[in-house]
Each structure stands twice: as C-alpha cells, then as structure tokens.
Amino acid sequence: GENVEQHPSTLSVQEGDSAVIKCTYSDSASNYFPWYKQELGKRPQLIIDIRSNVGEKKDQRIAVTLNKTAKHFSLHITETQPEDSAVYFCAAAARAYGNQFYFGTGTSLTVIP
Amino acid sequence: GAGVSQSPSNKVTEKGKDVELRCDPISGHTALYWYRQRLGQGLEFLIYFQGNSAPDKSGLPSDRFSAERTGESVSTLTIQRTQQEDSAVYLCASSLVSGGENTQYFGPGTRLTVL
Image 1: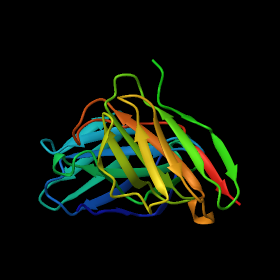
Image 2 (image 1 turned 60 degrees about the horizontal axis):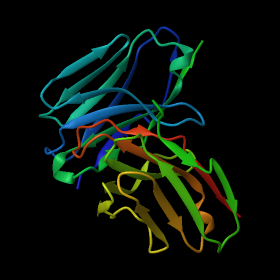
Image 3 (image 1 turned 90 degrees about the vertical axis):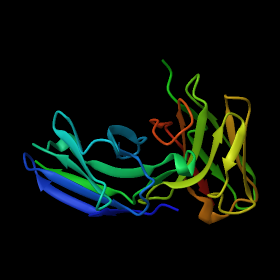
Image 4 (image 1 turned 90 degrees about the horizontal axis):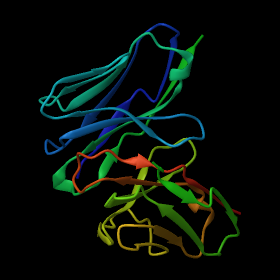
C-alpha cells in the first residue's frame, strides 16, 4: 500500500516569511495529492490539490509542487499571516486503492506576529 | 448547500458501553469515509463506503468497530464495549463520486471520551 511521510512536524515562521511543508509518497500509482488545513478544534478543509499530470499549481499565496520522479510534493505558503497558523495535512490517493486517501502525519504551523 | 454533518458533537461514555456515531453526507455524494483522529495526531483511515457497500474495511481497529450506510445517505459507526483508547475525534467525510481524484469534504467530527 501507499505510505505518506510529512516533514516537518512543527514549523514556526515570522509573519511575512514563507513556509514550506514537504511530503513523500511510496507508490507511483498515486495520482491525486490534496492538502488540508485544520484549525484548532475544527474540521480539515481542502486548501489546494494537484493531480499527477501537472507539476505546479498556485492559488494566491499558496502553491503546491509535485515531482513524480522523486515521489514528493510540497506546499508553499508565501507572505504568511497569523491566520495561516494551523495543522496542515498532505494526502495521496489513487484509483488503484479505490477511495482510500493516505494522509501524512501533519505539520503544525505557527506564524509569529 | 448543507455540508457534512455529524452527531453527536460530543459523547462521553463509560468503559464497556456501546456508542453509535452518525454522519450525514452532502446530498448526492456517493462515497463516504470515516477517520479517527487522536489528540495531536493525524487522520487514521477506518472505512469507506461506495453507495451502501464497504469495499475497504481494512482500517477498522478491531471487531468492536462496525459501520453501515443506508443507500447513499446516512452512515453510522458503532463501537461496542468501548475502551479508553477509543477516545478520539471521529471524522466523517464525503465525496461526489468514486475514485481517488475527488475532493473529500469533512464533517465537524464527534469527540468521543471514554472514561
């Protein structure tokens, strides 16, 4: 089956700086990679996703890059703001595994004002 | 429209008792997922439904856990003879169609505390 690893587990940045979270996956059959943001006590919410037919996707201050050869994908947040503070989860999914999404262990991001 | 809803939002029970958790997916979503999230931990896959069948039950931790779904609607997760290690937030999510490429929308979760 798939194995998703996520680093770092915690990350602190100064407001305005960039934050990068990295995930690796093990199975080349994975073809869909969403990122979820979970604020304290709230449900995970999708913030951006990427499919295996593209290498990069951007949405305002958030971008995701995918390297299929190396089997890793990263979340980039620029010009961080205090409201970006949350736990971020990456995931990998593939039709080969039916509907199962494999989640990373999460990164707790703190943006220091 | 309405999102995924779960009930109860909080449940406190005594060790050994059975509990039933409910999930109402977004209308029209054919796939439904259950996850467990222990405090400060990631999302642990439990089971998913496509329609009312469960092709993948591999994540259920033990035979004390079971789940069912009525048609393409509400699902219930039942935990029998609860143990303290069952304490966690149980999250439900739904997605529109089968396949790994579709967005999962999460419910607010049920926080289960086993005393």
